[in-house]
Image 1 (cartoon, rainbow, N blue to C red):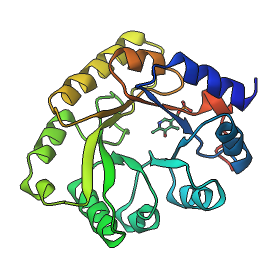
Image 2 (image 1 turned 90 degrees about the vertical axis):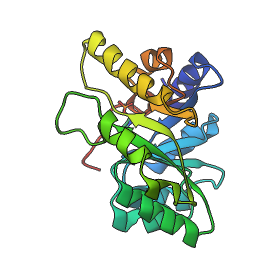
Image 3 (image 1 turned 90 degrees about the horizontal axis):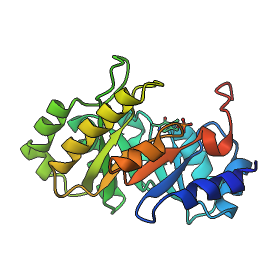
Length: 216
Ligand SMILES: *Cc1c(COP(=O)(O)O)cnc(C)c1O
């Protein structure tokens, strides 16, 4: 099936209150253009250099999402145009995003990346660390960022009960903060389940674009 038809199929399966992000990391620009032609406007990338290149070469009405680990020294490259940074995991990074947003006369929306998965290697903050960060007075001083909600990456597993329990933990944390309005949860393998648990933004890559080739 073509990129356009799978994109439309996934899109049509979702309620209008759920944003579908086409996760286009590693795929060539022609593939993004095909999804764009089918109506996709939200794209997710995980590397700063690739994101910046694609931003420059593709239509300017695209909403760009940074979903990968972000180093503070690279924030400046995406600050002029990025719409939402999903992967914030420290106060230091928030402070840098705030600084670069101010330089660009913007407010940048961000999500805090929450870690509930079992794998130790996964990045993100534990629910306890998120509560601590949200309580910091330094956070309130950052006028050029807006913390809109949470992003989570689940354990890679076939065991649905693990996925459900993780989604539930993330949703419970999300509900503690009435100001939050974005819950970025769910990927190709589990986005329907994520929506059941209140996800408002799903990040779907390989299902739309096909198997990824990381060597590119
Ligand atoms: C790659 C990636 C996705 C998309 O994964 P698929 O399984 O290809 O849908 C979603 N979220 C993050 C953070 C990613 O890095």
